[in-house]
Image (tube, rainbow, N blue to C red):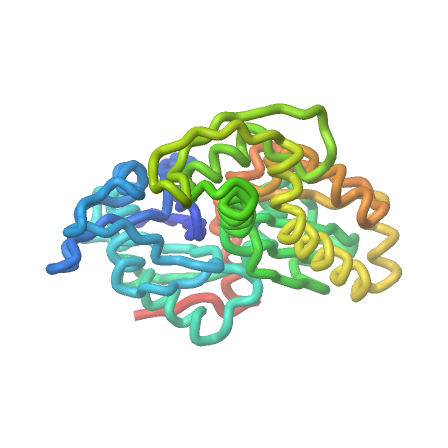
Length: 335
């Protein structure tokens, strides 16, 4: 028998769900390849360890940006690697794939994901929007006419949607997510302290002391290259500075949430006030992000249990109901 496989193909990480086994893969969306031959050297965790540490003959790339494919060949190699790693017993049986995409993807981007899934070894390949899958993975009951609001803060995009009767009633996407927060920290440290740091260092600072809402001041030591002398230098960075650095991208996310609320029918707004807003995605782990959005909207905000896994977990429900989601949304691309 063939397997049904759900894939959260994110800008920062890839999660793979296999029906009957659960989430079997959780690795970074990073690929290392030789510059001269384009030969793939490493994928996932092994490739991420090489970021910023490779010789000139090897380059590490993230083939997805803003939630969409920017390097088709590398994405294909990465997707094929994760599919075969997760479902090692094919061929002869090709697995059925369900791939999550941002709500804002264009028709061309959608076709690229379908084609990559098929070339990676999928039989029937389906795609479904991340906010809907995140809502399913968070355990929200979106079958009935009651409204629920989901804010999925990923690495490359933030998808916001109000859902009812298995559909997105209103939605907005902004290509601002965890990566934008990291980039903002990199720029802040360079501007304020004349220190050049890498994206991994910025991410560690964000996870260690970053917050979206004022908290008690904490500190973290970071290391980089002095912009003037070119020599290595350490710096103690505090949480207040990190919050200041992230203020602009966080404001963009808050504005996107408000814009969806502004477009939501009044009847569904009452449901959202009752149920609250649910946060999913890696960005939901940022300290104080729930309180920050609550202050901006006046609506209660809840962080989903295991928010990083919600989209992948949501593929479980969607795969079990392909007769509903597949036919209704015409997701399938067949041989």
